[in-house]
Length: 228
Image (cartoon, rainbow, N blue to C red):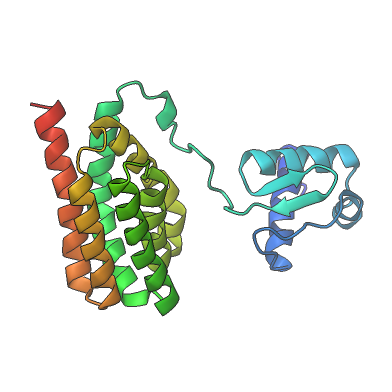
């Protein structure tokens, strides 16, 4: 151990376990060495290993499956509500401000998706736009599908930072549908179709513009309904 490192031992070991994950190139969902193996490799006791693992679980770096072992988290470092949105009482203001952030990011994300998405990803994006339309026409809850649509576009952008940001951004989608009582159903159907088709055609500028318009229409509805 580095004698100059004044941090608590479990914190030091937690970082060493991260180094271990990286050096062994463990992927999300893959199992870590056993507790006994970690004790031997890192030369510390069981209590220190358990405290370190507990810390990594709280940071969503690893997850414990009871009776099975410890695994690299599926969405490493992404927790359900990392920015504490659930504790903000003014949901209308939260939705509006989140839309402003989405306007900054998502048009570019759509542009990158048009450039980088694989053919199979494009088919999934198109299929999701169809599923959303069917759900809306059947008067069904489409919020999960809407989130999946935007998430698939984000993942298709091939930007590693965006892939970790999108769970935060998509919190806004469910809140938006709730606040507007799904009033923009026709717009949702049409805009999603257009965005999916622009990505299919590899038209980067059009995909960017259509996503911008999609968010701006939602913003306009919010402004007219809640902020005038």
